[in-house]
Length: 311
Image (tube, rainbow, N blue to C red; front, side, top):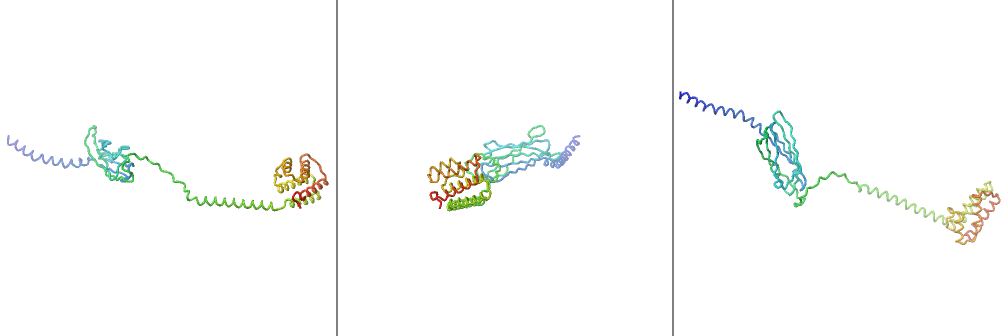
């Protein structure tokens, strides 16, 4: 009996290692397949102090398990500062899922700065920790344009609209202003020339010519009332140009006041003509053709009088 038992023990010693070797060959691929796959990427890889980087960790793991990412405390994170983070998951197949963790950091200091290690904590279906794994992302380069003592977070700047291209329109504006100035200058010289020409013309001669034409029109059948209206205009133009008073726009009392100040010799004769014209215009006076002709003759004597500047 002891011999049989001894043979069974020897047989078991030979078979058990074979069974264990077979099991290791069959189980190992599944165990390896169940190992998580982690991909960590950081962007951008170069920035100024106070600016932001984004670190994205993609973890592929078996379905039914959970993954969490642990970071060191704020002191161990320096010179990085965690601004925000978000986590999402999606199924990849019936047996695998992917967890994505996005973390935003602000970076300070200068030179090459390596991100602190990320600790991946795996939980089984019962919520128990099944394992831990540490990953250390790549380094980023902090440019030295900003002083190293800067410790404030730079605000995000919204895009600004391009400024108005003022310099492109400057020649056009200068051309417009130059053209306007040239027009004003030409108008000034034209007005001055007209004024000098009008001053050079003898007002007495102009009035005499108009009075002769008025007398001819009266002889041709012009109404006496129309004759007095035009006679008043001729005399007012003469007074304004010869004595430089606003006779065309003034009423008769205002003309009388201005002429009285000047003390001219034909004051009474001029005022008599103007009052007669006002009576015809406003008081419906009915002069005859002979009275109109006499008034024209009297006006001619006034403008030709040497004391009034006539000849």
